[in-house]
Image (cartoon, rainbow, N blue to C red; front, side, top):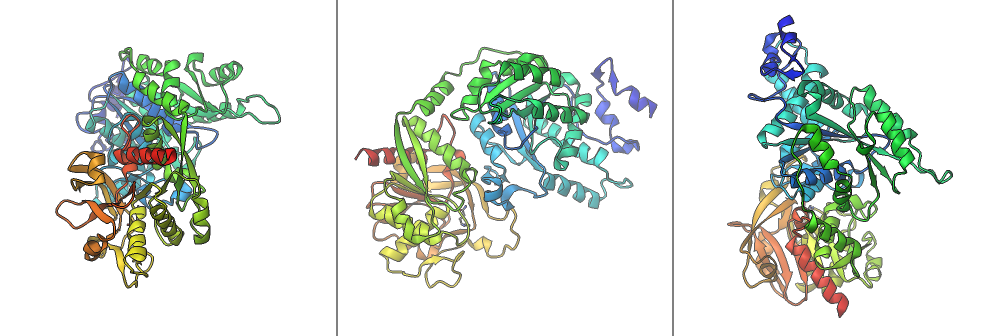
Length: 573
Ligand code: GLN
């Protein structure tokens, strides 16, 4: 054992065979927490934690810094840890948790992954997302296979060891220079305590020069006092230190610009230089944060810490994009007929996709939430909208109201975009009102309907489990030439992301393509309809997929771009 300790750190440098010595086969208290061939010090780590309150926008702050580091020429790999016991986010209620984001490989994850993809303009995969459920599932499966044979499986070293392993493995698999880790929730939560402990261990194992901790704090400004108070933030920092994490950068969130006095207090409390106390007060658009962090040289602070080269970066395109969002003159109003109208986070990607498209079209989109639980009120609510979106959804609540909204958009020639459930609503509306199938429905809502125009995908009929079993992730879509869809994409094949169990019933496909409706996109070699459009309408298009998931700030989704253009045209009429 003495020999083990001896070779751990020599002269402040981690010895080459340090991680080999951690192999549990040594019979000691160590545990293999690095993949084969791992060289400590090569990959750098930045860990984002939150204190005071959750919902501070850790994901946005991390994504903005990730973008800056990418601009400096480094390969950045983000990962989010969520303390939930759910294995993925697919079984979470968007009303409680916000949108379920879908990656190209079909991973259902937290909406922060969407933020990372948008800021980095990169596709991520399942290794960029970790929940406590996924972590413990892996550990329990290993235990059953006897991979810890003879050992009592413990939080230290096994759980912390697996965490360290996964972070290092992500770095190696993605050939990352910098792994950025967002720890969900706030410091002090029981749910992420062992994760924080793993990071504490990593500080020593990787060496302080190879890891940084960024703490987000909230600076309160009680209305009765009218001045910013830093005590809660200081206490949060103290809790963080009590857990053995020394922050390197403190990002201060607040409504207004952070007062100098507050920054100084935070600097003293956190043992960090004043320049590492960052002002991240509310901005008009989240994309502005990239510019704000740059103006405070956060990328340079990070790269200097790691001993990496900084370079002059060109943010002109980004600056232009932000200024178009902030200074847009024209405004269009888009009605959004969704179920979770109380919680905007449920539709985060749609809202972002609209902002990317509106920046490109020099306008602003104002959302009007359309409550669809009462059919009667729908038409009135749609007065004055320049376009209508019927987004994705599940179950029967509000369905009749959504169908009514589609009918109104069709009849009044209001630009219409249906997304997933919205596509299915458009099929039902068409069947009911134009083809005389009065009781047409989806079997999701009415399993015994006479006209099941929307029905379970054949492969779904055998599935009983709810988690991760839908038709998920990126799939190819063949686009029919000479259609609106082709005009939009200008390609015969595109890749878009899906998340559905039901589809347009193949038995009805021919019958449905009468009286103005055509299917202009479908799955290669299969009879799964993926885009529909109306030939008797200026802009009426719906997709079985979610184009919002692949929209990026400087590369808006072509579908959203076309929809916003149509809304502008409708407004100018
Ligand atoms: N509930 C529908 C289905 O499962 C639509 C899903 C969605 O909108 N994401 O097919």
